[in-house]
Image (tube, rainbow, N blue to C red; front, side, top):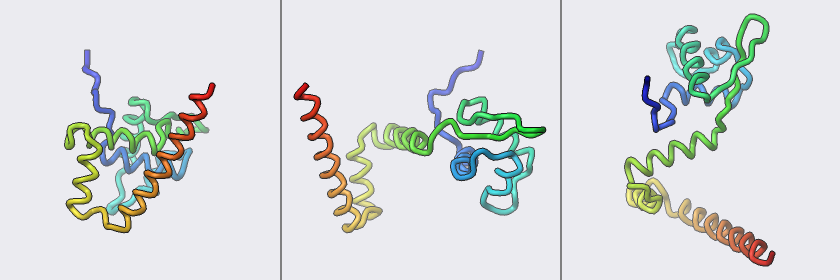
Length: 139
């Protein structure tokens, strides 16, 4: 019996296909093939195979419409991002989000204006959490 993969991360090609589906759903194999970026265009059978892989993994559902399947994402863009971020955090930063942010700051991928925006976002998040805790604490 095959081992289940613990990592449910999308491969680069699966991610490209999911991006097409997130923006053009439902879509047939032909529609996905037409919308995929890059040259040369991937073969129809390659796109069909990848959609079947995504279907078996439970990332998309398919519905027979006439003679062709239409594919719809089951996994949201946000969930896929969360899985990818958790994977990066675990593999590269020992699960530490703080280490990831520090790496972005130290490598200058986060400019001072972006850091200021993040600080405001954090303050807003903390205020919302405090308000939520206040509501739950008074019940």
